[in-house]
Length: 116
Image (cartoon, rainbow, N blue to C red):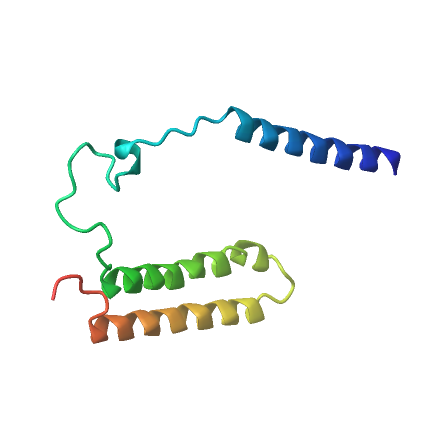
């Protein structure tokens, strides 16, 4: 118990000391170059706050949706070694079928076409 209390106290003390040291030593002298929205060396031509197209977010959500199948299907090689792997293989086939139907639906609706 004493070792745990010592480690928690040491971690807390070290964190507070390092945070205070950072605020004390840090240099706060912003200039116009550091405050500009672009860091490539060019002056901005328009507003930096233009809204993104919804298509970017749609493609990102579709990528995450179809990328989840990897996480769901990773345990399959170990599931085949079970005494009764048919249930696991049936669920995996159902997941793959649903994702394939979703991909076909998105393709038919034009969600995967970038240019209009």
